[in-house]
Image (cartoon, rainbow, N blue to C red; front, side, top):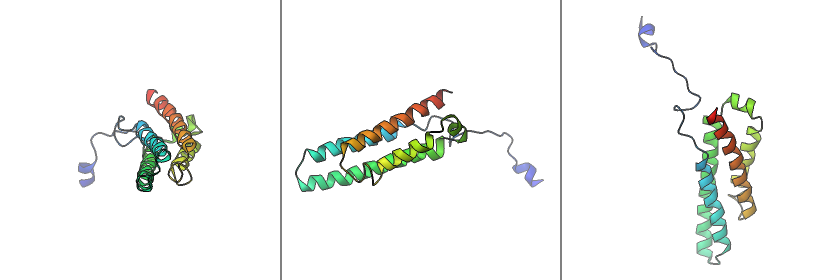
Length: 133
């Protein structure tokens, strides 16, 4: 009797936490653009205090890039997406590595920031294709 009362009256399903509209790769891109801008400001300034602050902020922004990418990877993309886009796993692997200590977070190489932005753009293209489907 209790089980019957507690059983949901309507069953719904969604492929993400909320019916779509809460995920967007633009969040990762905005933070990656910040990383790139900070790298430029770092290179253009000789003040050691400014440079230290720039590195700290750059590392924080790079960590946010990783966070936004992992939210997309773990909460939005599902097995059917991987079937349709088998390169997704490698794209996320590459992008998060480029955002991490071996990439934009741990260096001041503007080329790595550009590589990170390119990977985010590839992910965004697939994301928007899946949203349109």
